[in-house]
Length: 177
Image 1 (cartoon, rainbow, N blue to C red):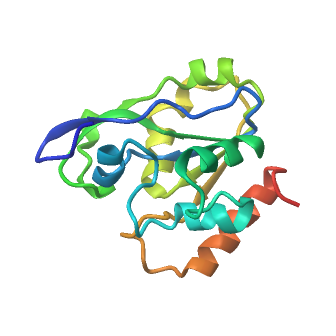
Image 2 (cartoon, one colour):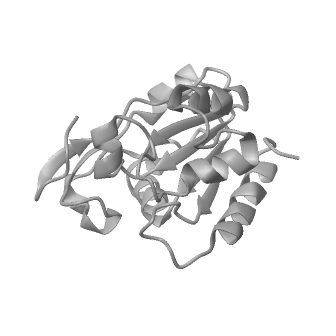
Image 3 (tube, rainbow, N blue to C red):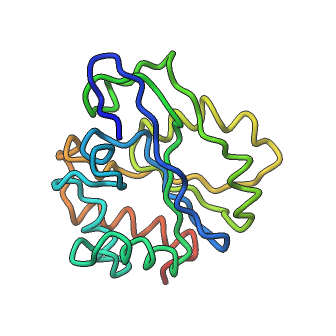
């Protein structure tokens, strides 16, 4: 896997999207720890898997394949807005905007026609989607939910507050009651 040295082009993972998915969680681009490990949200201080554990039983106590299987059972897919970009380090702020290339969302929506809600893991994911993807999706109705990042760089908001906001988005998407 690639790492994110000064000015290096990094590439995201393939979509982890079961055909019957209803919700797509989107990051911007995996960080260096995730790219090195070859799995989503691999940084030990990222709060994504603890949140998924509390909400869906897909927490860090399970091995990675079991976490993915649990999310798939719940109708949840994972991906990133960006297919590739140039970035130094792991921070979204280090992404060179002019270097961004979006993933193939029309292709994903063809494979997973039931996706109706997009949950953005942080502001950069939401802004990148609005700029690079949304203009080409005029015929696809989607509910967009911008959520606080689970990244350790976004430590200003406590875990319980983040969990409440993520839960609210999953309720609105019909995944949680």
